[in-house]
Image 1: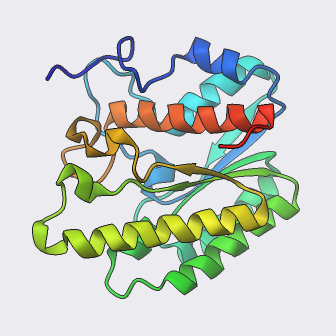
Image 2: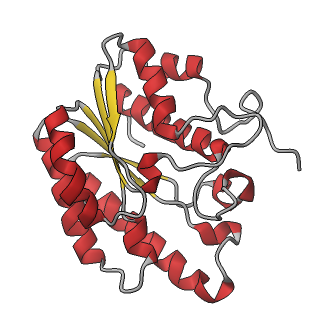
Length: 227
């Protein structure tokens, strides 16, 4: 199968389309916090711009709001507790009106995944941002086992942990009025062509796909329609 380019990929959204979808968006200060997903770790893929998912969103919002500014606090390898301890204060000090929170994957992949602890820390992060008036976006991670990227002996436990993390993230988001973006069972999850050679992070096609899902969620939020 031939890998598509940005122009032909049905799961990508051009900047022009994103701007049209988000026309009238009020956000002027965007913060991204979390782990490597937030940081935008990626591998270049021919046919796709070398941009992270958050940079793609920033590009569109900057065309809508000339005064738009953003910071990305994401750092790889951090647990949810570490994101809370090292990034939340800086995020709040920035005073965002839009915040993306992407964490939990490192908790999930390590032995002794403590879902209750992740819920506590995620709740603290999201509630603090919401209390300050920001719209907050969270996500449910892709199940890597669907693309057969996880050794068979670990597949069942990794899939179960991924789904538990997505479920608790969605619950916290609903409880606190955040926007939840579900990647878990999207058809593209099973396509190896969206992943980097490390079999863990997205390549630039995956980032284009991720940006598209987030932009669609923001557009629904602006329109006041359910997911």
